[in-house]
Image 1: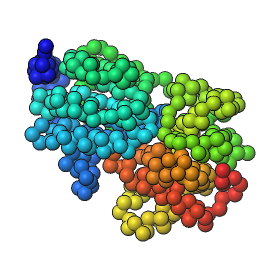
Image 2 (image 1 turned 135 degrees about the vertical axis):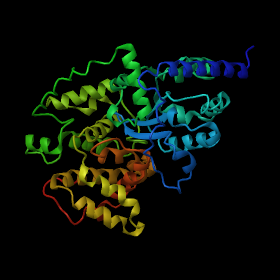
Image 3 (image 1 turned 180 degrees about the vertical axis):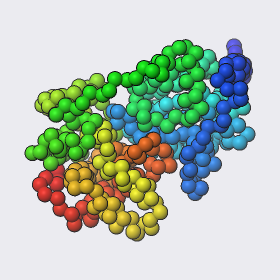
Image 4 (image 1 turned 90 degrees about the vertical axis):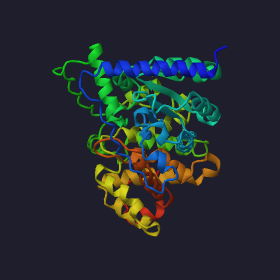
Length: 426
């Protein structure tokens, strides 16, 4: 019988072979690519700063259907003698622990794994064994990007340990463009080395379209459009409704049916169903959530609506102000948050107040639904504010979540003095 050591040697030989082939194919540049730039700057007081500073693990907000995107980039792994792999495993679990109670997706960028930085197969076996049911249950898909023979050998080694159900969650992605069919590609934090590698692969396979080929211009939105447009557009086309139709209908339904549902906003829904409902809304056709028989459907629709606004509900302008909330003394943060929300344009303030009032109501039932202000902030924070350009890094999530938690927990204080006309509470 082949021992684990023999199998690890086989995988190591394959990895070295792939490294040699890659060196031979470096026709774009005569010198190796530079180490990946690392924009992550975690606080030195972070409990896993020694690992987090490398940017190996990132959280990229939600995908189009409300599932957290967690990214593992092999090219960010330093040489093995510079990284305690046991600490890496602990940090991975520490990160996942914040999100495993809701549906989530893992994206593994394989490019950049070398003989010099790869964890041992024994480490991989330990990692898989430590990821008990709570980690595996809500993992919807594991995308392995730029797989090689090494990956397939390792997968076959571990097949006896992997359940059939978990095995179905694995999806190989040969080119980055394929991710666009599954995820919100613009939200992904992709290391520069992975981007360059993908360009070379596409050029070799002649899959890259010629530079002169341009995408057709997007179709103008329909007058009834709800998704993918701005609050201002929706308001201009629906003067009689202060609150966007999607928000008023989903929140009304959830207020009646979902306040005591455990884990509300943590589950996803069938992708095609969500697309169908979006289409109905965009065409101005009626949507009846009773017919779906699943309270998580309107919950996902609400998050999707917020996430697809062309400008976030909190606006691009306040993103940096939200990021600076950690620099404000704890006793003064509520006051600072109040200043920020009161500076919003009138309509954004109205809609935000309507939403946060509802989320405050949800948090009041947290003993039953398990959705405290902190838990709700983890779900909604990235759907309320994001930068004008680029993605939200793992380090940027903490101030966003803290800001959102304050909004929910201190709703009455923050929204009491500015009273917009019309419908302001759900």
